[in-house]
Length: 291
Image (cartoon, rainbow, N blue to C red; front, side):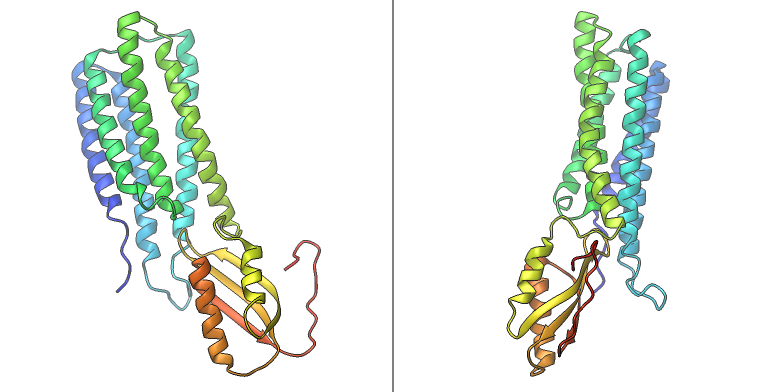
């Protein structure tokens, strides 16, 4: 049976879409442009969730003659897109907040804080749905960070709004917004770095190349290995190719099966391709590729 996309995407999009409609309605009712603007920001986040969901769905499609690995790479592209979305969104918040220091705007009142509190519940609840999968899937991690970012912004609105209404410190709202945005940027930078690395066919950070090499060299009948390549097919699937020199050609099929099982089991590498060699072949060594 073919795998299916994480159902958290469906629930996340549904909950956030309902919240956007409610936020726009509340903003128009009380004349708050801030709420309407925040609803547009949340709409961009729903778009980010939709992109991640579509990529997860594509990754589950069967391979074709032209795309022999299927569409697994779409999840890497989605993670990269979501990272860029987050960077732009947080950058816009910082720019807007800096502008408000010189032109402070009064907090709109209790209704704004109430709507922001609902936003905390919706976004934090959606983040919980993605929490389990975000540790091993960069695409889900991007969606998770989107929801955490929105929950953080909404929390900042509530805290700053309450304190500002009591103290009339109008500078507090933009200051809290900048602080929240900077915290989100730190997490987003890691997401962007990991997504770019996967897009550039780098070894996934969860895999130790030297440990893989040692595992292969320590396998019975293996004399040495070379041309070891490890890269991500998607945000969850890893591929490996390697040339192995054996001391014997005995039970070669069994050797390939057992070594493949060990690599898959020890390092969670889904696609293993091993080329066996014999004799006195000496591989070329390149300065920028010691493997």
